[in-house]
Length: 377
Image (tube, rainbow, N blue to C red; front, side, top):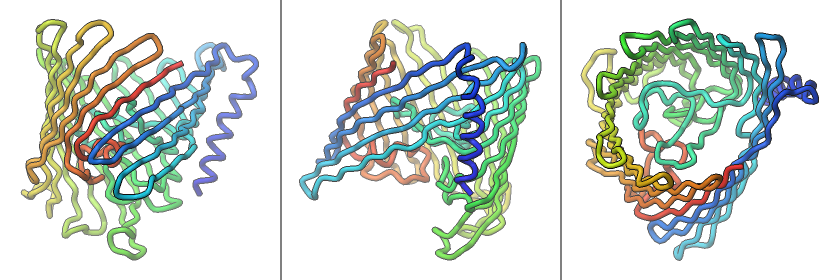
């Protein structure tokens, strides 16, 4: 029952609200943005406002409590010579959680963002978020969850989580979770040489109705390993394996991995270049060879001066031989950020592709430009 999860989340927040008058630190801030884009004879206008209220209150000398409430209010309009104008708008919870924490421990309950891993552009571990690295606002819906984290000395840490009431497709899932089902998992991260390595596990029950057109459910177990090191250049990897109780397209397994590296060249103000390679396969057994999706990504960022920055990203699908291109010019003031973006992509980006993210299916299809103004207060 998703409503029960929301009630529990609100209860945790209102528990902290009772001590609001005694709060040591409370803040109200938000982000307003507006954009215009033109792509493939389609014109889009949009407005978004994300107000957030947060506060913190000490519980004991070593334990503190805090809470955050944020909404996502947006309106979009689309115009085309081929059809009538389309209008849409919505107001929905964006973040809604309460937290108890100390220097080494954190317990957070409610609607929150959970993400982890080493990859930046092509992410096998995009399990609970859908952040598009090309999106200037880096927006993603949250999940209703209880998250526990403990930090050991020397930067080792352990995560445990439980999810409930998340009925939409998350991350790179191909199907939603079964309604009223509990998901759970954990992650352990430890230092290794001059970097770190981590193992992650997650269990859920998937609803395959959209695939088999009947009430079919499959249990899924996900296993992942990722790490990141600095060896003069930055290097990292992610690998993930999903086992399903029911075969999809002849396979019970879904295997993905990526390798990445970055380096900042001493050219002018410093040119940072990042590249990643990604594979997604459906083998018949864990170690069997299989054909699948192969992507490469390249990103470059150069600060022109203290206010202006230019960046570009390039993705290549080795299977379809399609290219995805984006160039962005950013100017930053005290509270304002202005973006000018140009993109040249295929006319439609499938959601299951690693370049889609939350925003990929609507913002960067086809060839076009986008102008965006963002005000933070």
